[in-house]
Image (tube, rainbow, N blue to C red; front, side, top):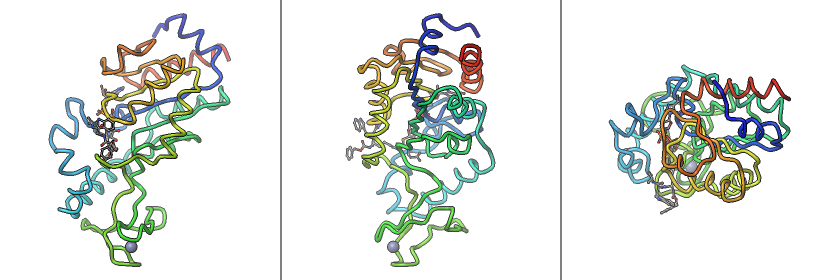
Length: 247
Ligand code: BV8
Ligand code: ZN
């Protein structure tokens, strides 16, 4: 792939880089996106699954949906896009991932500075006493929603559902990193979910060079400085190859 000279100059002189990612970066790992042609929300309604009232109304159904997604995630792994982003840390001192994804694939690829705006599917907590039940320490079996062994309350995924606030410190730090970045890559996101989608917009306003990597134009295409259309799993390794040439 041939890259624009202005973009190559930005890559050469950049000191801090942020990767703002969405479900599209995990598509080539076999994890369905939300709004694409085979998106999750085409078959299921987010308000019936990814919100607290849905969970209270039918905890087993919501819990089972997350266990199903976790099974898909556990059966796959990071793809070349996640791996390339992790490798950027070898060539730049200040690399941050700000992700909307809950699939933990950036960590599994080796990225060491990851802000998870919408939580992490391997983490859970009791809705009554807030006791934590992360997968690392708590083996969940069966399809029905588990109950807290401290107070008997329902255990929910530590994921930000619609209508819920994002973890304020995570959002603030991710926003600040993006605003102070020299380049902010926007990879595999439709950029329609807020307040997360404010982050790349804030980066642009603060003077960061915004680069979109997506298979098709999105809400943010008219704002970015440079669009690269194609699969993230193909484009991100090619950008890394360019970096290796001049670093
Ligand atoms: C909140 C967790 C405060 C669940 C998710 C303005 C300000 C504040 C809020 C709002 C606002 N406007 C509207 C709202 C409400 C709402 C919202 O944004 N709704 C949208 C849909 C209109 N926001 C909220 O509710 C947020 N909370 O605002 O709290 C508050 C509190 C009380 C009352 C009022 C306000 C919470 C939002 C978080 C919701 N949780 N997920 C779960 O995962 O189970 S959102 C969900 O969407 C995922 O987290 C996902 O990450 C996120 C964004 O989607 P994308 O990642 O972009 O995925 P998508 O499928 O859309 O796009 C994939 C892209 O990849 C496509 O562009 C495709 O072309 C591309 N692609 C595909 N394959 C590839 C590829 N690109 C490259 N390579 C490929 N191979
Ligand atoms: Zn409890």
